[in-house]
Image (cartoon, rainbow over all chains, first blue to last red; front, side, top):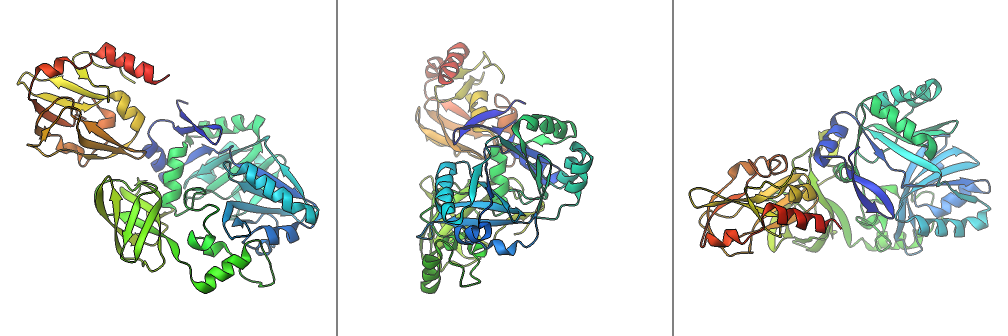
Amino acid sequence: MGAKIVDFGGWDMPLHYGSQVEEHHKVRQAVGMFDVSHMTVVDLTNGDLRGFLRVLLANNVDKLPTPGKALYTCMLNQQGGVLDDLIVYFLTEKWFRLVVNAATRKKDLAWITGRALDFKVNVIERPELAMIAVQGPEARAKVGEALENEARKAASGLEPFSAVTIGELFIARTGYTGEDGCEIILPADTALALWQNLYDAGVAPIGLGARDTLRLEAGMNLYGADMDETTTPLEAGLAWTVAWEPVTRKFIGRERLEKQKAQGVARKLVGLVLEGKGVLRNHQTVHCESGEGEITSGSFSPTLNESIAFGRVPAAVQTGDRCQVEMRDKWVEARVVKYPFVRNGKSCL
Amino acid sequence: MSKAPADVKYTKSHEWVKPMPDGLVTVGITDHAQDLLGDMVFVDLPKVGAKVGAGKDCAVVESVKAASDVYAPVAGEIVEVNNALADAPEIVNKDPYGKGWLFRLKPDDRGEVDNLLDAAAYENLVASEKH
């Protein structure tokens, strides 16, 4: 399909199939698909599953009362640092599915397996599964066209942030673009046929490059850029994913987060929009009235036609503040905004 | 990707240089360079009248992916810049050897242009960078 291929954590991944900006617009305005088979699928079965996940994850799986529901959460170390961010799907009381990042695969599996022992939970990696994300306002209609009867029906009735399994197919109404759509997990040997069906239905293939600008516009964090083991969810704009109630739930990292919350968090993640010319880039220095910060994810927003970024800055910084970003030996004006920058194709600024 | 045109000269840093009948040279970035950088979103051009030294950075092309310096292929004075790129930097992607030119330069020594790479030498350079 004419893709430019790059190495991504040991996977050969398509960066773009032509123009990254055109691919971005396709997802915002119509539909596109991503081969995200690099994502790690981990099934947890049997044992005291809920008991295990209540400890393992900073968000609370008890927010998932009905089968098929999904939850976005961080997995923390004892110091409250983010080991990874992931989606947990509740399928049955004996089967939860985690989708974790590819770059953190080894570390995550070791951590999860180590903690699962006490709860007699089986941890099963599913490397034989592929994953295709179909995203955009027309995504669900196109997925319907590409699927057979039963799966089609199930997919069309899916609520946001929920999933369904039809035989070997797992269809979730989730994504990483800020648009409606599905993520489909299926055996790798059947993935090509689905990819072809989607392509024949008019779904354009989209590369990693557009995936990054789409998620940034949508205000979604990228592990390794916006947070890692040295940052807590409170410093990464992810406080909303931490379930403090009930206080009796002793999830890993809780003590440190409570201490930090009580003392006040020194740094936080904000949205930035560049006012001068250029493009905000990762690791540029941000100068604010209350101190220095750093761009964690910066790029060009094709939807807004200006440069946007996440920056980790002193906690005193407020929405509407001005700051300066050091860019190629010059200081360029930027303003602090609330994110997401874009949702369902429309500017939030 | 299209072949490097034979009627222009090239630099190792992926600029092309076209000698004009009026003694000026037009400068842009090669098709190979725009392909590597991807979608262009911003072009920072030098000021008209600026004196530039050979090999000195004098412009910036910035894509979604990365920013890249553009170097003056020969010493001289900037006499014109392509203002159309301010609103439509993607022209550099679409027509790198034509409408996507960056600036025109009056060389201090027109002979310097002859010392630059010809199309065959430039294509060899690109081929060697791919390995």
